Length: 306
Picture 1 (cartoon, rainbow, N blue to C red):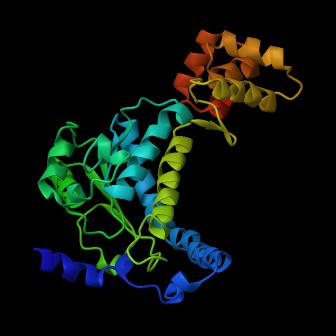
Picture 2: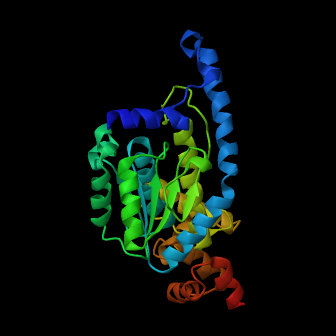
Picture 3: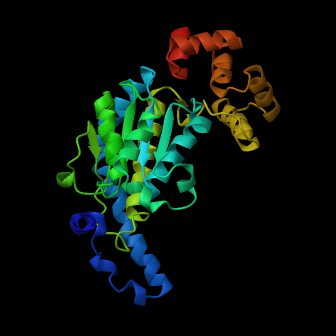
């Protein structure tokens, strides 16, 4: 089995040596930083090339979310941590239920703060951890594995397909090497890392960009944003409370700080409701109803009122 893994690593893009950084151990601090930055410049372009596939993935997510389904990320190491991070940021940013986007990481919660490297080799554990989430065909399961081959992730994805879930896969290997059956594969090819095999670098950056695009675009399409402002955020901290007031002042130029505070309190702390209340001169209950009838989109609620 060990020789099999060795042979796999020989062919994986992220495990190759980067010829541009072969002498990095002899360079000055300045030159090391330049080398890293030069490689990072390739990442955004690699992600841009995958936009057609990211678009298809977003459409799958929209269908699932509208049907009451969930998005479940599955990864190991850096990939797993990035999935858990993206999932954890959706509730405060977009006001969604924490169950809507979730992250599974090989090795469990302890792997978030201390590497559990052997956990990624457990194919059966990936399937078991996924089934513990009681997935149904309404859910979407997204595997994240820079190298493509991670057994824990593959096990979860194959179990998801048995259940009937839609499946996505994010990997930083070339598309022609992607041999795992999924509905949509997203393959930003970032090439060999600055340090051979250290996928916390370019591959990790590319993965974070893709995750940002998936959930942010889906949430915008679900009406969680007004113009380019977050209006469904949860006021779980003083910063978010003040951001909510600032958002109202941006929407309504001339509104004072105290007036924004009063409007927000009348809307029970919900920015979206406050905007509709003021734009359509209605109370909180009516604003809620107008938003409900217009799928949560502020501009539709206002236009249809007029």
